[in-house]
Length: 624
Image 1 (cartoon, rainbow, N blue to C red):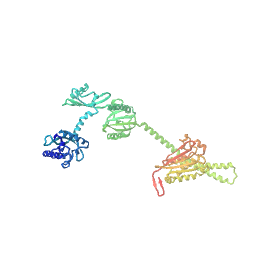
Image 2: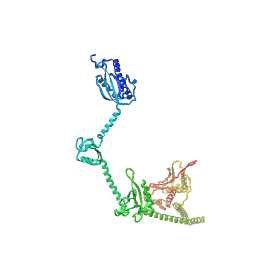
Image 3: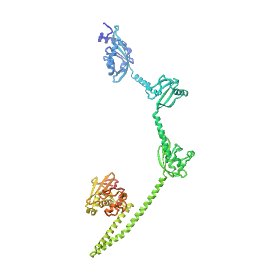
Image 4: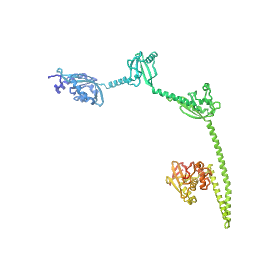
């Protein structure tokens, strides 16, 4: 051979035999090694595989003998192998090389290995290599963790530095540059004095606050006595200080609001002792000086009958429950006879109850006003009852003479049959009869309204068909509608419309009054539209005409007894009682009645009928 170190002069068979021969001599020693010991040819073919390699990679000896070492390298690391083999062929030793190999289960392992050339019997002849490797995955992970911990101060966004007792900076992260500190420099006197203070007191100094370049910081200085240095940990508190400032300003405003409140605002500890009372409370309880406030006992200002309510509410607040109570004060204890007081727990940031808040509002004037209104309502009710009784009595008293007049007029008319009387005399008799009829109608109307307003109407509830009622009303009003060629149009949703439980005569009276009203003030050849729809638990009905409309100034009076707008008086005769009766009847069954109108553009009256429930029958659905 020209050059005995060249591996290409060796046949494959010779290499394998010689490598095996050398490696087998060491096999007994290395078999039990914890490290993977692998023998391979210069081409990377595995020829020996110890127990450590099996334990490390999971492959048995039989599985790996004859395989290429490249099969163990992770795909991303296989391009390293040719260079490593070249170094072996040149007789170089590879030490502590890091790579990633693949285990039998498919997981990656961080492997650190060393590879040395194996020499044959012929001097200088390289016939293969031995590789000793170990799994360093856990070690690498721990090293990474240690390095991460070591990097922590440097990566900290806030200043962290170490300083000797003399003020020399031993370590400083990048964030410490805000303090103009760097490794090797001497800290300003501010820091040196703090360090000396820590060393003298032999304890940590916390939350030292100061400003730098319009930013606020807080630092903790921790002494390490056996090392004779201190560690300084800083944090920026610019936003916190701004928030505190805003909070202080806000608290100032709130305190001003509390002090300026006319309500009595008190803060007690959980034992019931007064901690704070605002200006409104001091005025209410006549607390002139500090001694008055110091000796103030809220319970002593309350009348005996109401003290138990206050005590119970206070105890509830101690359990976290708020209460609102009405209490009465003694004349000596307060200038407010009645108060509505809210008693609530006050909690800290951890939700612990630290005190009790009482806010009392003066109800004295409200109580007096309420009582005055009650008395006024009672008087109005009494007057209304008296009026209704008078109207009822008057109407009943009028019935007899009206009936007598009507009767005598009819008798007189019969006796004059065949008698030659003048036209004027005949018209007088007709006028007497008509006046008696109108008076009788008016008396009946008044009695109906009086009964309705006094609640003396008895409802005869039965399932009724609203459309049939409208049709009946149209027949009754034929003498009014037909001469004017007026029609009534009925719309309903749903169609067919369910029957409803109501007093048939009462509903008919309301429909008659509204349709008659629409006919009276609408032109010839017009249509009166009646619509009904079911909306939830309410039946809505409307009656729309195209008549003269109601002037705006008359809107608030239209349901009053005997009231008729000026344009209505000019257009047609009437009593002014129809709408009043309709309103009284609608309100008896808990409904509402209202209208929309514009003078010259007609009027639409609306009224509602509440429904209690629904009953399915064999023929139809009935609402009751």
